[in-house]
Length: 166
Image 1 (cartoon, rainbow, N blue to C red):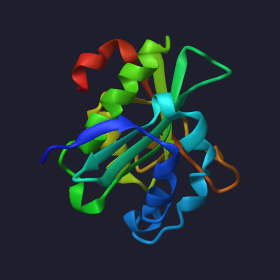
Image 2: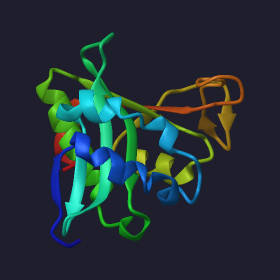
Image 3: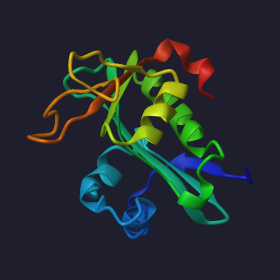
């Protein structure tokens, strides 16, 4: 990996990220999942990876307002040409440290059951999958988590194991 700087997300990062996020997902319409409010209100727990002035990855996460001992990762994006270099792991490490500094003991996130790369990535980072009687290809799912037909895999991680991520 070349020299990458990890810094907090800034409001000015919104347009550069929103302009590439759909392409980073192979044309899938993902931009609607990233309203500007994330870039304004969750800066202390959201990060960008910058290389030679270009954003090559980002993570948007926050501390739960309902459960202040829990953090939530809303979105992770890494430039397709930069995947496999450890940028996602690096961004998660910064997020975990920030979340722990805010008093969080666990982190959670979700993905679609068809996103095998995401499931494997989160398992490598030490996330556990929330058990369920409903499974897709052996992976436990929360049926209808995001509405009818929108099943999700739910991940959780104990933040006491930070040393295994960074």
